[in-house]
Image 1: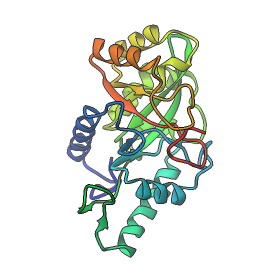
Image 2 (image 1 turned 180 degrees about the vertical axis):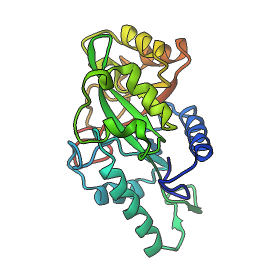
Image 3 (image 1 turned 90 degrees about the horizontal axis):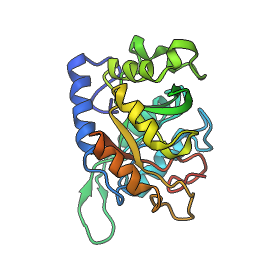
Length: 246
């Protein structure tokens, strides 16, 4: 789900349209997309990040982000705050924003998509599943938006994935190389449960200047292709700077 013109009380048709559009955006993601143009993994102080929603939006505007998602753990409070701030900012700054550098002209504000990061069990291992473009008020999402990890059946990866998709969203396995099982095992298991994509472009080694991990990215890209999965990117920002993780 996007901030505008789609509102939280949207129809199933609008949700489907949003998901299709975001899928198209994910299909353009490559190693150069993040953090300057696209960023689909970041946190505010509504979960375990340092940034306020307002500061995050200001940074997104300054960076010239085109599409992004706030993926706080088990809450959309930060998304809602950021959505309102972005709308207010647009009203207060009606003049077109000028691009700097070689590409002159105007551009639209960054587009904010609904997002969340959910703790889940996949192949008996705790993993994180990212949800995008879902309807926050959908009944299927309620076990996952209570500021705490789900339990029991709700925590199983198959249920998390199905719930995100039932709410019109896209389910993505976050940073597949950070868990106690191999990415090959986990991606295969996630694909069996109908996952839509995996986070391919991720800075596992936390470099000073963000860039996808050169050792792990080729494996992630190949796994996505092997299982016909979407490829996403994100800084997984928890600190004060959207261009870094911490």
